[in-house]
Image 1 (cartoon, rainbow, N blue to C red):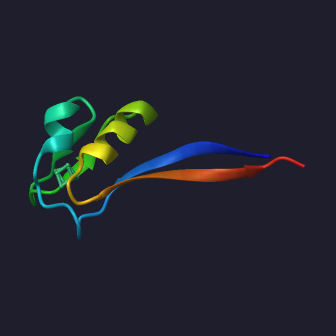
Image 2: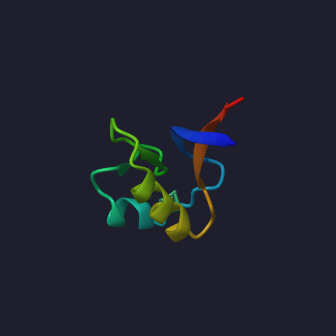
Length: 72
Ligand code: SF4
C-alpha cells in the first residue's frame, strides 16, 4: 500500500489568470507575486487549504505534489 506524503503546493504560472480566488480564500497561504500570478507562500504545507484552493481555482492552476512512499 502506498502512503502519500505532500511535498509541494504549486501554482502553474502559465495557467494562473490572477482571479484571486486562492488569495481571497486563504490570504495567509497564497499571495500575488509582482507579475500578477499567485503563489503558495506559507512555510507549512496546509493540505486541506491547498485542496480547497485547488477546487476553487477556475483554471486548475493549483496542484498538490505528493511523494510516493512504497511500503513493502
Ligand atoms: S485561484 Fe487560480 S487563477 Fe486565481 S489567482 Fe489563484 S492560482 Fe491564479
